[in-house]
Image (cartoon, rainbow, N blue to C red; front, top):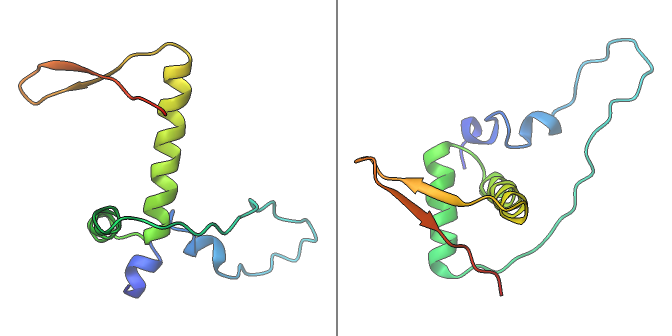
Length: 100
């Protein structure tokens, strides 16, 4: 991955860089991170790489965003919300997400 993609805001690289000292002794609250290893099918891995290239972010950032979207959808569906998608021609279709 090129340096520009690694430095894209929101991909974690901005948090990893050292910050200049402000002379203050206050601690900066940084979110804890966990390292998780996953195995993806070839098509899922290709999709992650495609989206990372498209949005100029790391593969990890694509996965972090996917988890955030999944959590949001899960929370909304748990509250009773209905997920719909509107096509460019204005048609609206309900989407059913099934969990096993």
